[in-house]
Length: 630
Image (cartoon, rainbow, N blue to C red; front, top):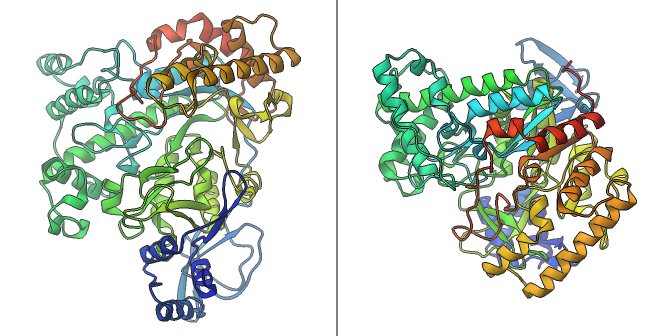
């Protein structure tokens, strides 16, 4: 690849070579680099175009559109700063300014100035529960766990000494059937999923006459072996339409635009890219005001019930921890509303590795780093504020994506992409500022191949990484818990990995063999699973945590390993505690496996009385004694 193209790519954050998962230096195909540059509106299709674009990229344009500094940093710059409160300061350097979002003026040029905290307060030492909320069904929920169940579970958990409840993403989905099951492919990350509304907790239901209440009650769907999102949405939407009080004033343009998308999607489908040309821009689109008001009202109900659930967790040192998916459906609400800051046509994923030899294509949209900066990171800020409004923490899925993301251009396969860099100081700094203002902890999912700079960015800001028992290895041996990182949230597994009982019974081998997902033969995989079991038992015995080798004793010892670790936060999964063998999500499958549709084997009420749940709570509470939030 010619030198000028490499320089042009570097100027726009497009990577031309990277270290693969096996450590080998990998060169990106020239055509991919040119195509990705094109997605950033940079013409690199000819030598002359490259020279012109390179000259433009290296020309000093003066003040950048956004400047993010950390509290205590000093930067020589003479100008006027307009603070958030409207007051102004003449400055000769950027130092001594309060935290917040300000405006900087230098020689008639203006920029967004963000002053972020140097670091967050140290996270408390606490334990808690890791919950797939949809799976937490109760005697009063409608076919899936809801925000009423979250409220009740959080109150119970607080009473057992738990310090946090870590949830799956509750992001909004499209309003049409079939309903999107995966919480990691949302329509919008700023707004909430109305499937989680507890219909019978709404003021409108509670104040309704008995006849209307009876009509609503009759709509409740039966619980099935799997969660039927379509049945739940049909029932809840019909019930809420009966209770809808009519449109009310909305002072949030973003919420109105989101509701408008939902109404248009009902008529034209959830992918706005397939809509009539005149509707593809929010500025040109209108919809039935009464129906728009309905979707505004649903978001207000979500907000109210999230606030009530957060209140139930108010005495926890952390509280409810929400999950931020790495991206959104490009055809969804955020793709429609935020088209100016998203890279059109790009899909994000991951390059090939030992587990995914063809790479991964997650089908999600990506931020455009240049447009984020040009707009003062407003969309990113607003998303973070919405997620932190009713929570004590935020887990960031694939946190390395704040530094770089694997972009796959249109028409390319998952392996035919490259990394595009983001301003990590800005992305992490803004996250720190919004978490600081919300009094929230931050956990980054930093599993797999993660650059050392990402780990430093987390630790340097008192943000936690992630430690998973399955991955705490030194060669074939498991690392004892006393050697696990302190600055982490530690778990036994994740939603994409075998449950504790599934691992011990080799369910993960059986199901992958049945679905043809094994790279080697079933016998070889079973041998590996048995070797892993013996290595785990050896570690637990050496750590003094295991005496008997039956499955239940091993699962208890796994939780004891969490308790024995120095990790600041530890969480137990209800799937593990209840002995569920099936994992919530099986990567590499769609309809072959009931991803995101497996309910817990017991109701919420039964779980709260379950001896295993209570024993696990006592075990973890002894290691992380409960304390009230400051």
